[in-house]
Image (tube, rainbow over all chains, first blue to last red; front, side):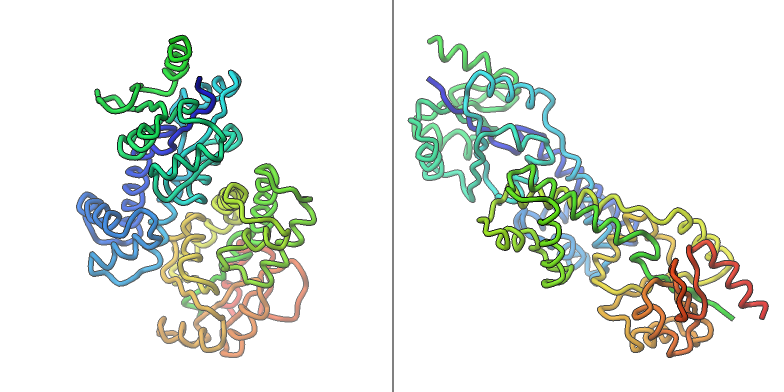
Length: 216
Length: 216
């Protein structure tokens, strides 16, 4: 019997990738408006390379971008990029069915949790801006969603693997390590896949799956 | 003859103090809503002490606040404070007469500049959010508004002290060091003062003062 449901955040609760792309494109447009002499499309490709090289949590992507473009550090241009980036990232919004479905599952008595990879402050920042920070019973943030992480969540929740369901979009992070421990996994994806015990297109399909599982 | 006009940013172009207080009070309310067990008024007083102790540019005021309250570091509470703080600080707005007056002076042929104390990125961030970043010909940011700073501005503008006017709210930073060099100073203040060559209540009084000065 399922007692707790774990949700991934990025691309599960909100369209993280789309917001990140919007935020980066806005930032580049703002930097060009502030005086950066570069082509927007080429600069976007360069910025993506920089993010890949330094990782998403490096705080000076735009400084690295100016270096890459052989430009001296210009605080007007950097600030223009940061303001535009933050304005886009600050306006993240959940997938429309997410808040209702999660509240519905909570009211049915399930323990509702977040299982997220990243930095705790940054993931909480997202939950707050999504307006979801008071809906979850527990929020678990780890630097890596390994088997060890899922085992520590089981310990903290004092539950057995078969009492837990993990919902997420990443086969590598949300499905495989959880499934190895015997946790029921639900892949959120629009593409057919053999991974995960179940696959859904959107979170609102979850209550029916749980009901089916309980009746089996 | 005045050729260039220098403007201070904080409390000259926008009500910086009021926004800072609003941002801090919002942050504390958000932290209490996120689980901080403390009184809002007392916590605000503690936060003000911490800002005084560590300086306004210290990036971890809220962590220091939790330590001060003998609470362990809780990323939910810290993130709630940061989000609320940034949301308030992101919505700064210029004094209503500022944009029109500055554009009017620029169209009359004056070189319009910012002379600001702080970190370049942070001051540019404010100008961008105020929608003023494309109005100024030059933006000078220094760690300290000393005589040396004003001398370097004269050199960069290739102008004599009597060709420059400095407008700001701080006697110590905007008036005294500039006046020592012979720069015409305008104090923005609602309180009578013997400091500064002129005193105005708001920026829209500036064109009349310059006209009078030119006709003398």
